[in-house]
Length: 301
Ligand SMILES: Nc1nc2c(ncn2[C@@H]2O[C@H](COP(=O)(O)OP(=O)(O)OP(=O)(O)O)[C@@H](O)[C@H]2O)c(=O)[nH]1
Ligand SMILES: [Mg+2]
Image (cartoon, rainbow, N blue to C red; front, side):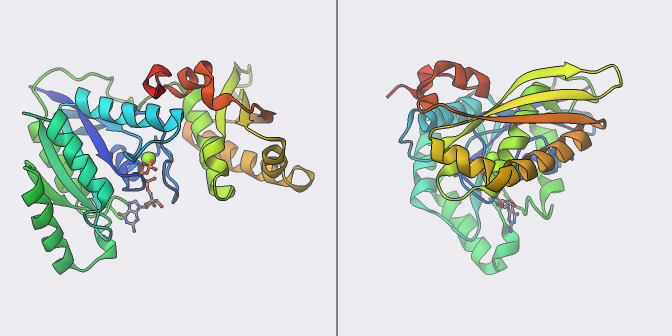
């Protein structure tokens, strides 16, 4: 007898959803940065625990959206929660019950009726245990969580306990993915995400929020390597200059970092070519959204 189910990880931006997804899967399927709003779409990562297959749905952070892209991201996150068998809300231990967390709890009241919702207090490595107990009590008074877990997604503390519990509570049924599959995202998108991660880590302030990366072409070569062509869309000439850097130094090092990671992920050689295009209005272009795996309509005000 097997079990299988979708586990949506939701929470404020930066809560550690992608870190936890990767920790559960045991491989980097979702990009992680110290900046908020890194994840832009739902990313599925698959883990196996005993006879259960757990399909983790990493989601964009929930925040008060301003732009079309923000609205589409938030809609994708709530959609991921609505479609899941189990929802895990991640809250940052050191930040506690923020306004953002309060709003998410209100949202959960509306959508999660009858659903199994667990609380994951993350980043426990950052606080003292007394503070944790008080926070767990406070949150459980505000919402009727099925179970509470104290974890450090980064260090792995408490993660096995959460995984075993999930394995017990997902519905009985056949596995949804082959045993060896760890992600459900086209390789061209995983590759674009890797480049976007390197850009986000490298660029400052608002710039990461004003660009997107797409894999335009993917060519398998006879020698077993792959040629991957990507476009980085930015909004202004000045941004293009920053991404390129002095004598192209910046884009060169970004490309190198992304290629190294891609090669490691695929276990073979990759030739990565990056091009920067100025597209002042990309945030309002429908095609950019479908490339990201988002619904353009969800971004309507
Ligand atoms: N100290 C500590 N840092 C953590 C832990 N988990 C995640 N982080 C860090 O928190 C930051 C955000 O992690 P992400 O996994 O990208 O967070 P996210 O919830 O996916 O963020 P968005 O995609 O922006 O919504 C990164 O710098 C992580 O390294 C943890 O358990 N302890
Ligand atoms: Mg994320």
